[in-house]
Length: 175
Ligand SMILES: CC(C)(COP(=O)(O)OP(=O)(O)OC[C@H]1O[C@@H](n2cnc3c(N)ncnc32)[C@H](O)[C@@H]1OP(=O)(O)O)[C@@H](O)C(=O)NCCC(=O)NCCS
Image 1: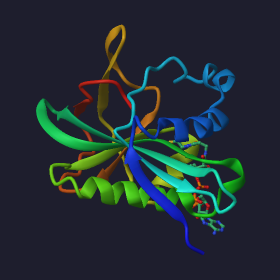
Image 2 (image 1 turned 90 degrees about the horizontal axis):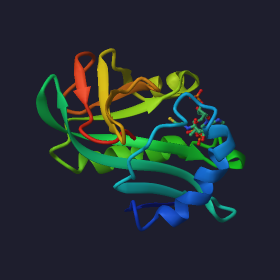
Image 3 (image 1 turned 180 degrees about the vertical axis):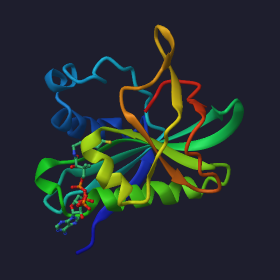
Image 4 (image 1 turned 60 degrees about the horizontal axis):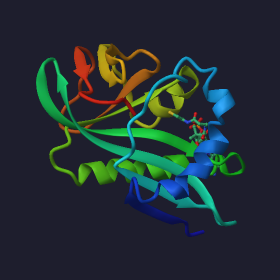
């Protein structure tokens, strides 16, 4: 079976992704989450997989950011908005989209590692796909100012750097 997979500009492809976001994260569910109040960054690129039956099956957002790690600037990639339509789950779509996102980030030579944030029920999913927990502190911007970001747990995918602890400042909104 062949699948249709695209990597598109984040802003231009938002109208394609929005219905999936609304289905996976309805606003009445989101507002009850510990992260429901967070203001998130917009994706720079989006990996989109079309369902064989039509419509969007899976989405992964890609972010590029110069952050600081222990006070030193470093270019990293971010992953966010990982979501698969309920009737399309457990077919490997998120795994395929994550691999495409990592390959896209690898193509940007400056990217030293990738970072995502997730909830405990997804820890095993990411660990089994090569992501490692980051035990240090994360800081991020919010409309009210700089905050320590603890709403979700950080996981790292190593490229040429493999941070496991220390302080990462996202120098902007989280993803
Ligand atoms: C988490 C989520 C994105 C996974 O999407 P998915 O497309 O179902 O992911 P995959 O199919 O790649 O993998 C899911 C499981 O199905 C299994 N699987 C993959 N292909 C399969 C197949 N053909 N047959 C049976 N099982 C399969 C995988 O092994 C995996 O199991 P594992 O985690 O025990 O290894 C999806 O459940 C989701 O959208 N959840 C709600 C939103 C969310 O929590 N997003 C994460 C934000 S960080």
